[in-house]
Amino acid sequence: MNSSPQRGAARPASPRLSPVSPITPEIDEILAGSIKSVNGEPLNLFGTMAHHPKLLKRFLAFGGFFLNRGLLPAREREIVILRVGWNTGSIYEFGQHTVIGRDCGLGDDEIAALAGDPSRHAWSKRDRELIAMTDEICDDDCVSEPTWKELRAGWSDAELCELVLLVGMYRMVAGFLNTMGVELDPNTPGWPD
Image 1 (cartoon, rainbow, N blue to C red):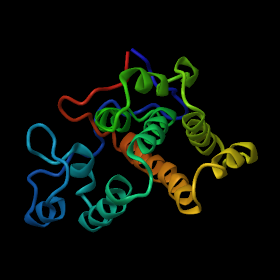
Image 2: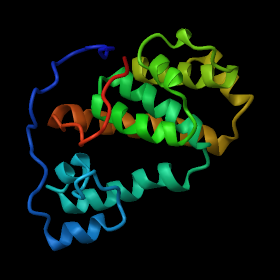
Image 3: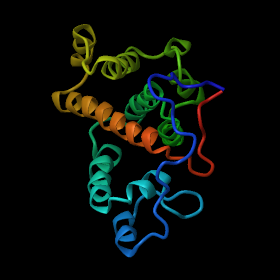
Image 4: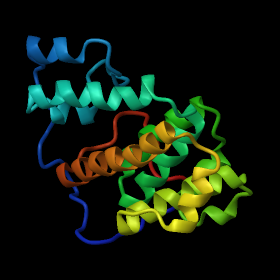
C-alpha cells in the first residue's frame, strides 16, 4: 500500500476531537442535505467541525460551492483535490475524494498515479498542468511562470481563480483533518495499493 509523503509532524494515531455526539437540532439543521456516512451519521469531517456550528455552516457553503456550483469540470477538480490530499498526507481527504473521483470518471490507475509519482500514468497535457500547478502551490504557495503560461492557454480567468482557490481550500481542509486526527468514515478507502 502506498504511504503518503510524511513531512513535518506525525499524524495523530487517534482523534484529538471526536465528532459531536449526539447531534443537536442546530447541527442537524446545518447538516440537512449534506453527505452522510454509511451509518447515517454525518461524515467524521462534519461531525468534528460541528464543535463550532457557525463555522461549519459557512464551511459547508464555501466547500459546497467547489463541489456543486463551480466552473471546473468535475474530473479535473478531483485530480486537483486528490493531489492535494497526497501532498498534504491527508488519508481522509484522499479516501473521500477517491470515491468522488471515481464517480467523476477517474480510473483507479489514475487515482493510484496521483498518490506518488504521477508519471506512472499517461496524463493528457491539460492533466499534467493541473498536477504541476497543485504540486507547486503545495510546495511553495505559488505557481511558477512556465506552469502559469501553460494554464493560461487553456483556462479562463474565472477558472484560474477557482483552480488556485481550490488548492488552497483543500490544503486548509487537509490541515484540519490531519491536526484533528479525523478518522476515515466506514467503507472509505485509504491510500491506493
